[in-house]
Image 1 (cartoon, rainbow, N blue to C red):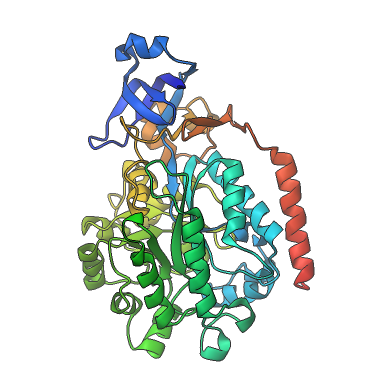
Image 2 (spheres, rainbow, N blue to C red):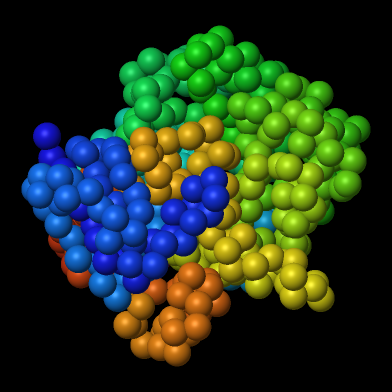
Length: 462
């Protein structure tokens, strides 16, 4: 039995049902589960005495590990490609598909590790990743193996594309798969990797890519397959209503707007979450709320690709679960989840209402909101019985000077986003004093840069 005590946090942000913020806060952890939370002065003496490890969090703000609900790890290899820097989504994709077609298993592994370390340093302890290209022997197995080495909770979304250009879709045929093979591999990875137990470190999601890259049949069959596993809780994920171009595609190809199209295929439900949802109207928001479908909000990517502003305030007011996603690192060029929370707050306000989102609401999206979107009740808050996923930021950082005196919780979001001081996942300390403990970051960056160069060379773009 391993007991860890964290005490004397300047502020302990619980994100529990009462949203308690505890000055001079403490928590006790038994193995990988939180067993007590409260003021340091009230820490039971026996818990302090039995601690194998005590962490002094003086001068730090401590909060639940952040939750990332949408990403494309492999895109860390294609950040700021010049020809894609000033493009809207469809043009951006057409520029990058030929490069991504040259991915190899080693690229998937190193990009997964790089993305997860970057996320971890931003305060993220649980991440989903939507990977939908599988050329040259790449498999979801590569991601699970890489994620296990880093130690971050990982929801691997087995993405797919089957509707190539020859069938009226957007991607080139050579990056698509046949649907029978897709469904067969989806079943395989669920049976090999999905862990439905509490505090699971890995889960599988079935995730056809988008309305313009898969057929209606694959959407229906993927949903049926996921639901055939019953209590295992296989969730469904896809991109939806991201751009006006997608809306026009759906109206032309299917005679329906994207949200109505998804609903007609059984893709609005409490086991489904959609990325983006920029272009949905009031009636569609109501349909999401009634069905219990969730949304991954990706503000940086939506701005980067000039996609628009998602109606997050309206979604939340309707009762829709909303989490944050940093989205692909080729449409965000960063994997900083705390930075995403800041942008979410600012983007809602830019429409003219300073009350559209507060700093604390932005942190809710990044914690309990993300947990709800992923269908998890064991992460996202600091409370007895929750997973020991804990991060801390140093309030003595220059960016917080002055702000931390007035409101340290708001400072996390209003001020320039910082990296963590420490990060714990599942009871294991992975970052201390701002440095990953088990990763040689210099070597990882070198390997990742080399992989990026070789990828461009294979694609004839170097």
